[in-house]
Amino acid sequence: MTTRLTVREAFFDFCRSVGMTTVFGNPGSTELRMFRDFPDDFRYVLALQETVAVAAAAGHSLGTGGATLVSLHSAGGVGHSLGAVFNAYRDRVPVVIIAGQQSRAMLPTRPFLGADEPAQFPRPYVKWSRQPERAEDVPAALAEAYRVAMTHPRGPVFLSVPEDDWDRPAEPVPAREIRTDFTASPAALREVAAALDGAANPVIVVGAGVEDEGALPGVVELAERTGAPVWISPLSGRSGFPEDHPLFRGFLPPVRQHLSARLEGHDVILVLGAPVFTYHVHSEGRVIPEGARLFHFDCDPATTAWAPVGTSVLTTIDAGVSGLLELVAKADRPHPEPRERLAKPQATDPIDPALVVETLRERMPEDAVIVEECPSHRDLFHARLPITRSGGFLTTGSGALGWGLPVAVGRAVAGSGERIVCVIGDGSTMYSVQSLWTAAQHRVPMTVLVLNNHGYGAVKALGRRIELETVPGTDIHGIDFVALARSLGCDGRTVTRAADLDAAMAEGLAHEGPFVIDVRVAADDSALYAPEAR
Ligand SMILES: O=C(O)C(=O)c1ccccc1
Figure 1: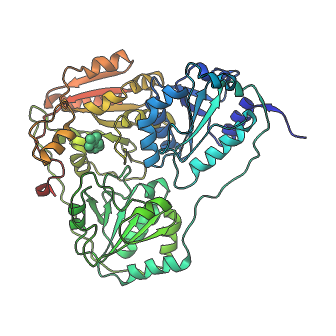
Figure 2 (figure 1 turned 90 degrees about the vertical axis):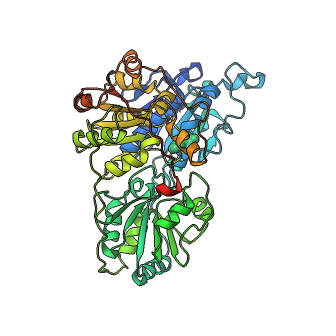
Figure 3 (figure 1 turned 90 degrees about the horizontal axis):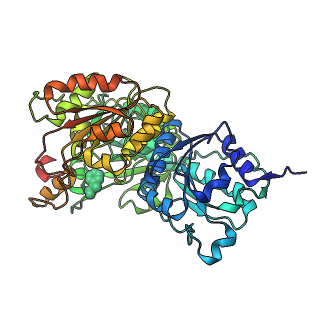
């Protein structure tokens, strides 16, 4: 005989069985029956806007390595969240989004708050999207959604639940497992191994898949075995290689012509867990140097299908790299010249953003996790602050701003006391500044370092690239970030003089709970991705 439960009981039982007991959300009347007898072992983390809920859940997921549950309110709430859903999809972060829907009985008369075609709304930026036909199907649909989210390539899924479903009877979801790692045929791996063994000058390009799929140790071993230098793929949302390793070369630019120039001289290119390639602005030219052969490991059939060159091998990265390590011979190649260490800039006013990054580097605890969303300063950040361990760096690989601050909060909620440092622009901060309230409520160990250049600096810099002297709508003045942070429950400090920077950094990094440092930095007048810069 099967046990009869309510939809709600079967739903929470399943969540518990897979460890999804933290719910990020923003509630409304269409979710009220879900909250009846809300279980004591579940934690509801309130976000004051839905982009914050989804991005914080993504940060939590990145911290735990599992899927995280998000509860949104009907059509309007889902609409607010979509920028973050886009990033979660492109960045392959498994978030299980449930959204309230009006009672089934009311749907024919287009009720207040009701969602028309709810499953369509978040598409195409979810892997799976449903409103079950019957109330009793909700728990099994949740289980299916969870499994889809956690199967490589991972990503967000969406389940719309009508309000009157939660009290209806349902059956428990049977426990089962899916083993999600997979690798290519031995013949495909032999082909890649033979190419590496026969290469005169191989190179490896790593992407977010390396860390997301737990492949970093294997990738380091493969680089050392082959002696191949390693680049990080353009705009990668993670690091992917210890940036202090002698084989580490740097970050590929997201411009076809410049990227190809960086790979000049290599005859075999192995891309691991990155698209081939992510560009930000268009340039003509070759994807890879003439005569070079490219091999590409990725778990996503779609990503391998649109890659314009090379041989793609469908595999999860750890499994594929482990397979290669069984086959590839040790090569004796000299290590490349060590990368030049940039000198610390002078303490001048207005403050050089490079000085801020150097000061952070000196003061940052070893186990700190950096969450970055400062497009204007990303290159100098990468040049001056090497990330040396897996999970130490998180950003968006897909570009929708307003992600970094809530991701930092969610990552901190998932953490065990390590400092989360969110290095963020003033423009980025304002998309989802409500995140600070959630950070304050949970007293998370988070330091927000606002590199405040009073505007959308990256957009200005991209404008200069195409000879635009000014771009309308790119100046932001008159925001007091510390006053704003205080009103949301966070402490903070404004820094306008280089002489005050070190003390503020020390205070902000040691502060118990969240702390905002608003550093007024000198505006830059370089052009992003300019030909002469690369
Ligand atoms: O190009 C843009 O408009 C933009 O929003 C952006 C996002 C991330 C990095 C640089 C620019």
